[in-house]
Image (cartoon, rainbow, N blue to C red; front, side, top):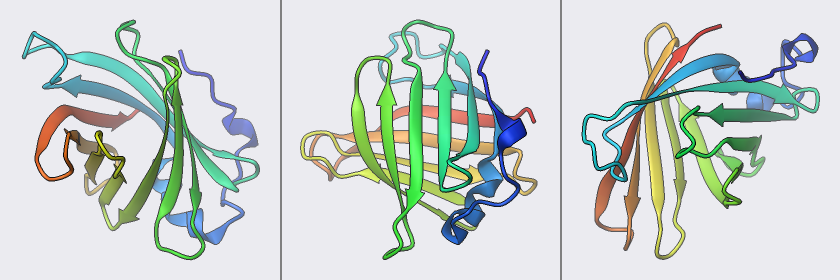
Length: 159
């Protein structure tokens, strides 16, 4: 089970650019489907993700895990770019993979992307009207032009 130290989490982030990311704060169940890397097209993986403030609200931190050992545990630290309307996301997982993504949140649409040559990736998620469900998909590309589904992902707020 994921450990969160929410008792020390401030009500408001210390950086005003992070305020709109407050919608993520909490614990979420995750469901992964349509996985391009799984030979079973009907396979479903379930996990857990939490979002919390880090360093008195200077950053948002995300922890994710899926009990199935085929999936890595991941952590992401998200912070604003004061010169843009985007955020930087530093990602690391239990495989030793490190990636830097860009991220945006406009209205109910959450986007994450990286344009690394040879392995561009993008994510688009949409919040439900009550902000308790995020329906999303990760896509990958070998050339940055032709995109294919990597997997679908649904977040359901637990608390």
